[in-house]
Image (tube, rainbow, N blue to C red; front, side):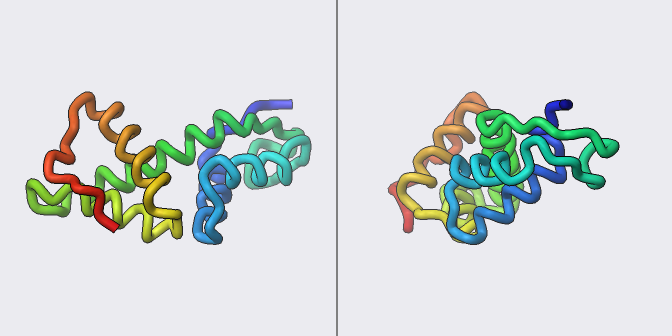
Length: 122
């Protein structure tokens, strides 16, 4: 079996679960459960695929961080926190918990806090 936990097709499949209200952790777990050990012509060359839910969850978060960073690039300086809200709303997530974790991960990726005027929107 080959590990395809971060394969773009599987990450996209898991991200679609977010639109149904699943958390990133739950989306990774359900995707892994559904596809682990199966063969998929869109992933690999027909080999049985191995999916690690933890790695897949990190790949989902990376996708969400990238989405937020793109959103921040379109927002006026000082209003970057609206990109967090946009990501939460777009991916149908429960605002407070999701937003706090997303903010923490974006700050970690950038190495600094761009959300200076953040007062916890939503």
